[in-house]
Length: 493
Image (cartoon, rainbow, N blue to C red):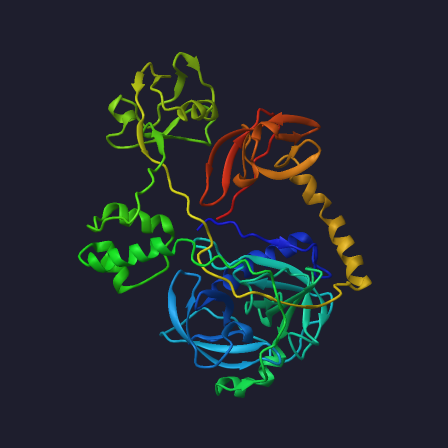
């Protein structure tokens, strides 16, 4: 599976590791760390946790589960949502356990029982910041240990520069061996202070936690600004679940009724569009915007506008076009690249296309519903607690950070033709990544307001940008610039 891991570097490195060695370590560890990280769904909120045994024992934070014996569910990295029950909670340390109520085996990570970490060492935090998002693996955060405590998530905690926010509560902190050394607990002021419950403190109370005991009283602390967003499409989910129950004979519905799983809103809406429930909507349904479709896709890796695929019975096939045809003109205007043709395809008017093998085809676009936009993420949050903390880094770490930045100069030079700044005036708005040497880049769609004011900066020159297309669900935009010398990044499986 091809996916991009959103590494959020805090500009830190273990002593003795080069950036290349660190990169290899992260790539090796990441799949297993992500697989063992779970989202914990408690009522209308969610936190995180880590599976530490094959039969489904999970370590999390006490402020996530609150009390023993509470029924909840866990969302695994493979999309399964399974029932679980909270075990003991230790409010003095903010450590807690829960058990998945389903047969394993489950992916899990080993955890330490005694301190084996020191100030200055590297740590990896995972969890579900902002709540779980359909299709997004648990993001990996990289940081350094600036305090190596052993007693609690509040006092004498493990403090790192690995940034965690609401939704990450209860998620794991790993060392470079992939061992769980801490549990995400709270953040300090300034926001660079991230505190984690040391595993030795949880292990010390292990028997009590396994026996469903409550230790101490819940901490009374300032909560992170409450940006609860409830279920952003609760109404859609209710209609979807009702439609499933009314259509048990539908193969899709039958499979979901037998094996429930978390679905993104697009799949739910597609099912509702296909199934007639017979219910009258309480309010008129707003007309869905229409988008033109000509019935073919282009090979974006090719330098010329080459047809990559043809939709059966679509306008292109009916007009006689075929896979592999190279388009040379549109409405008697030469088109030399996929981008120049793609811009013409955005219009709703008919197009007359000419191909390199002397075909002439006039296409009238079929208007289909544009892909609906649904907000993400999909769950509420369990707020990250805020505690006091200076955030002052030891001089040794500041020195190592400077050395690390210097070591990245080689990498920065290697990528200078692949990652560009997009500016409005003198202010950098966003960066864009080159995906084709012919001038195609990907960037963050929501940052491209007033695109006519934006300029890409490359080799001392500025270039206007053209937006080829956007996908609101992923917040990705494909843009183009007319520049030479761009180098495409290399994608890995």
